[in-house]
Image (cartoon, helix red, strand yellow):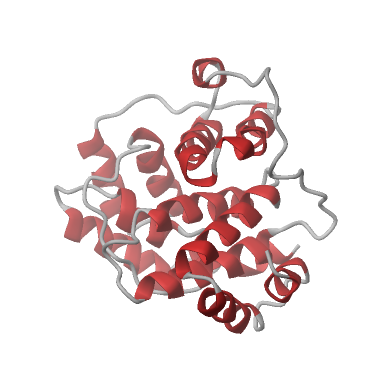
Length: 240
């Protein structure tokens, strides 16, 4: 990763990131930019809502590469801004090439996992084939850190009921989170989302466009859009 691109992410210079990202993509490729951003998000991970959603956003954006056209670059840039914004300034992340022969299996991780840990397990294993086996230890570090905290797992509910809750609550963070947990891993037909500052709603508008339902999709996304436009802005929480 070139210093010219890496430096504004480390410094959390959000205004400088778009130009640095475009220069990186021009010099290499948009695919290489995506990998650089996703690796940064993983290595900067800390067990906070913004940090975990930044990594989830990077995973989700990869599923949009064939449906967003030129907008894919803009979404990657927003992922870069979000990962930088949510990075703890004192963090010293592990090296991506770190390896171990004693990594836990997915079954072991999921056995006692709560909602947040389940989402990070799904995200980590989805990113392994994208970022490579050399990054497996760094990726599995994310759910392991989640599991170090007390776990709460929501009871299973029919997806139709969870969709109803999202619509009735006008896309509340809690209702969409419950849907994402129950529907984790599913991306039946991703829809390209708008380009926006992802910290605004913990990237849930992006995630909803990728992992949302096929049935009642328009109602579901309309509720999420309402929350983005009228709900609480969580951006300042990422700068603590």
